[in-house]
Structures are given as structure tokens and as C-alpha cells.
Amino acid sequence: MGTGSMTLGEHVFLYCERGTSSALSAEPINAVSNIAFILAAFMGLQLLEWRPREQQTSDHFLLIGLVALIGIGSFAFHLFATQETELLDVIPIAVFTLVYLGFALNRFVGVPPGWTVLLVIGFTALMGAATEVRCWDGGVILAGPDVQGAKPCLNGSVFYLPALGALIVVGLLLEERRHRAAPYVLWAGAIFAVSLTLRSLDMALCDKLLLEGRKVGTHAAWHVLNALALFLLLRASLEARPSTEATDAIPPDEVEERRPTILVDKAPVEPEAPPVAETEQVAPVAEEAAKEDAAPEARKKVFFPA
Image (tube, rainbow, N blue to C red; front, top):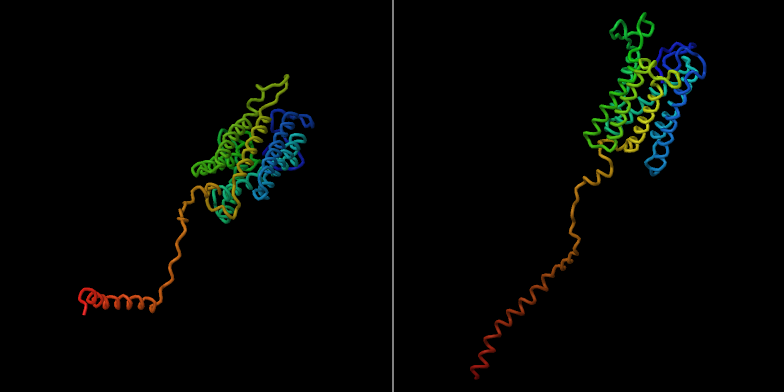
């Protein structure tokens, strides 16, 4: 994957394996290694298909499709190495980065949609500024690609530094909330840091990495490790909840576990006796009083006969 200037109609010579050759077969290892992205997309699709239908969203299919497009675009670029095919390489990468950032902010972190859009727009501006960073006379400047004597820093890898920073920040936020997606995002960030280092060293190690006497560089390793990182991000996306529920970072089953349990005594309750009518209460009282009045007279008749 490359990040050179965007002037159309010329060949691009950015990587060790190609050198200065414009032949289609100049980068066989770099080109073939893009199969890793297709495998990552296929494995992500398989994991999604194993999930219940209600958990499969259009966002998941979009992310999987973008990973496949990254592989196709990068293959075309390393095959033809023209400015036109460089666009096919760069655009899917940028789109995936922005879409996944918005997905992670809203569905993982719980950022409201309006703020998510604003943050993604700000991140887009940051990525645009990163493309203008050049190394010049031992220093770093923010200038266009046509500045005399200036060249891309880190072999053009500065373009990817905002994405690495976003992975680290989002991963740490998820880890703090103990979100199930946190390990996948953090591992993806760690692997991406290694692959970005290898991409930056492609030209520096060009003369030291040979295969049957042929210079190969480290760019193919960048492809393979990137594909692994993208697969982990696809796996992490399966831990997201629907956007309508993205108010916090607690997965649904954990919500059920944390919900307080209310114990209810289900013992049968005896029905209350109906109120006794007032007339029914007076009658027994009158009868008892009459018996009390008649009791002395009865005793008199027994013990003192007339």
C-alpha cells in the first residue's frame, strides 16, 4: 500500500522490490501478499455468518467489503504501479479508517451520532495534514509534494500515524470499561505498530533482505500483518451493540448480570374475610346479654325453690 503524490499518468517507484522497473512482474511478492486481505475478509464474513441473524448489520458487511477492497486495490497498485492505481490503493484504506473510527466511537464507546460525525470530520482533517508532512534538510515540514528537496518521512508512513493513535486511544478506553472488544482492538494496535515499522524500513533494509539474490524489502510483511490487524478489528466489531442502544459500553448480557434482583415472596395470600354486616354483629351481642340476665334467676330456682 502506498501514499505517494496524486499526479496521474506516471509510474510510482516507492518500494524496494520494484526498484525502478515499470514491468508488471516487478513486485511479485508485494502483489501476492495481498491475498492476506482477502483471507481476512473471508474469515470475518464467516464469523459474522455464525452469529444470529439479528446481530448481523449492514455496518458489519460494509467493513468486511472494505477489507476486501483494500486487498484488491493494493494488488492492482503493486501490479501496475501507476498514479491511477495508487488511488485504488489509498482510497479504500482511508474509507475503512474513517468508517471504523465512526463505528467504534458510536457502537463501542457510546459517543452520540452528532459528536461522532464531528470527531470523524476532525480526524479526516488530521489525515489530510499527515499527507503533507515532508522531511527536508534533516527536519520535518508541513508542505506539499512539490517542494524542492522534500520527501515523505518514514517512507510515507506518517499518513498512518493518526490511525495508530486512534487505535491506541479507543483500545485504552474500552479496556478501562472492560468492554469485550478491548483485547481485539489493543492487539490490532500492537500488530499495526509493528507492521508500520516494517513499512517504514522497507527502503532502509532493501540491500540487506535478499531472496535468491533479489531485493525484496519488508513491504510484504506490512501487508500480512495489516491483514491480521484488520481481521482482529472485524472480530472486535462483532462485540458491538445496535446503534440505538449505544449509550454505554456494557454488553447486553452484562447489563442483565448487573441488574439488581428483586426477591418477591410468592407464598399464597389468604383472601380477606368479607366484612360482617352490622346487624349480624348486634344480634349475637343481644343474645349474650339476655343470657347474662337470665342466669341469676335460673340459679335462684335451683337453690331456693319456692
